[in-house]
Length: 604
Image 1 (cartoon, helix red, strand yellow):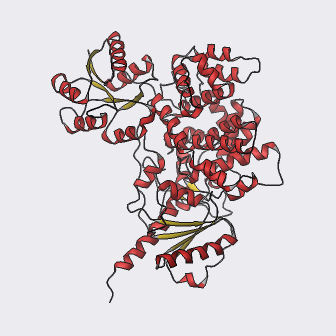
Image 2 (image 1 turned 90 degrees about the vertical axis):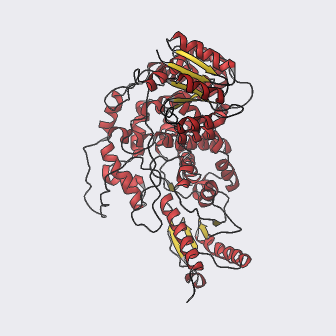
Image 3 (image 1 turned 180 degrees about the vertical axis):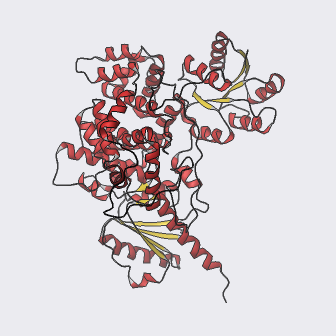
């Protein structure tokens, strides 16, 4: 009989868990504090520990560190009990060595015992594959932690996307020259992908809920009755209804209240989110990291919803769903054909090229085409399908003001803003221009910037809910992983005319914006006129600092206007949007470091 130690300072959580586990044949011991738990571990050595994070005297992280430091106790599996507000502590636990997480108030008996059996080796949950339908249990998918790669050193020539490559990959194949015959690594067609997707099972209850929400004859009572058929789905919808993503105030206490609080369309969106996240969790050997993928998708969804509200569109919920699913085609290709997709992701990083262009050249279609095919199979509304599939819009056409064109522009801008604020990574961590899309929607730049800056907390809250609802190992937020790989972060004085400038948003999010002691200046120009005004502002900044700065010019327009003569002598570089995070970071850090090195070099 396995012994489980339950550590929580609140009896209201500790005692029901202990009673439940005893019913399932486990021996339980309990501790009301971390010091008491450490003493019990020495005396009884449990087979597994359920450890609360937030406790008086000593928190769970400190307790976990002490356990891992003792050779006699370091191998005991530990599952952390956490609340939604404790994401930062959960991330710290990941570095110390924790086996999993459970939201204290939002897990089922089935989920708890399944996690315990998994870590005790009493039976593991199957991992979904491309040829077999996933388990009917929404929490039954499994993914393993993946190590993030190191940021390439400044000045290196072969740069892959930072934090995009979770496992070793073979060397990239050279990019084909223009006009070269397209070589497809495997005979892939949209029809073949569509057929394979039809073989992938969809959890019956989820499928039924989605159908009900699409029917005008369905009532909220019908939805509640359907949700009750699946305990795990019920708990996840209830937790979603009580998360910050769906409002504030008195929370939902049961499924009917959750259904009423969410409403028909939000239930459908949340159900589809659960479906898609579970559908692909842990089956991405081509290189996409599920958590980072959904971090980006959730950010795009929230931004699209906020943008739709800003321009008074009545279908903000549809655009939320389009944002959530806009890159699903990438996951499908990576899931079904990882050996084909891996070199394309590598090539995007090496060339700093547009991934869609690489996909079109290598495959004859893009992930947006696959997104359209998959969403058609799921019978989603046409507006949602076209807005999601149109997210790769290169430039908006202001002469086309139909509802479908505006919807695609909203999702395209949302995708670009999510990239700018470094929320997640769906395969191409790239800075993209935003100005023409903001102007096409007649949104003030300040409004777009406010939406961008306000999205992080909502994404973190929702992402933690999904991570703790399954067995996914919670990684750090992508922006923090990216920042941790830069040995000496640059201090960047960003000069840009617009509040919504993507370079400004990126540097702010990374914590690198600095106007008092900058090591490098970046002039970001959305149009040719911005360059002249930016140079004038740079001169004013340097006069105040009483020293020149190395300069990076970021252009979002094609013309290569030369720098004024006075700037040519200083260390400088020029990049053009779109540009990968890795190339932009390498350019800034190498200029800053070379300037600092020359400043301290001994004079002859």
